[in-house]
Length: 330
Image (cartoon, rainbow, N blue to C red; front, side, top):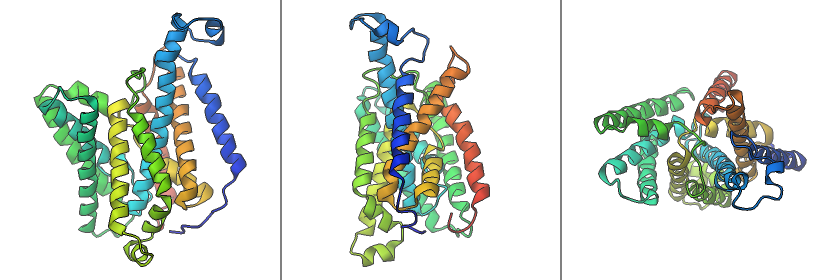
């Protein structure tokens, strides 16, 4: 992996991406069934309907889109560095399915627990599922780079089947469907704030970016530079697990996001994580924002869940990446 390839990113292009995010975020505030527009907001008080819709629904939804998009993209970047494979992210490594199983388990065994405690249990299950995935990889002769995501998808399928079985036994299948289908339509003020924990994990990933970059070059190289390889890997797993569980609890699962965005950024600016983290976070937020706006406008006034839109676009881009790059450097 050429870590220092493309170390000079274009700051003007990055500023253009940020400007586009601001414009689309402002546009997102005025898309919906309720009539919220500058004319209805101008001169209105906090008690007026348009202002209430803006403060209670539209602003929290837009904030959730930006936070979830950037955090999930960063989670995919960290996981790809840990596994040293371009085609791995939480939804192709069993992490998301493990988080769903944990959330189901705590819902069955301790339904009265607060949401923060349920998120903690979900994160522990996500951590255990990701660790199991890495353990399995040690015993699989990986002659082809494509076997790594294949192993993760199979593991996720097994864990998902277990989740479905217990959800069926306890009549919780609709709840599981809601968790596994990413959807921002239910986001309201007071129901998305956990995503700020994912933002904190993103900041941590940026702080530890140099360590992750070195760790991505292998255990021996990392140890020779005086870094604790196991500690860096553990930090990465914890960050990925927290982001996956927080996003699942708040807005559901958004597939392929953590796979396609880091790959696009790698093609643009290289693989140095200190440089790529801001790009991945910005493009992740932009990508989810665009998909959400498309989902809201395609069948207006009805809405297509974000998980469906991102799944369709992401799977097509995933296939393109698979066909484009199948060598050991993928």
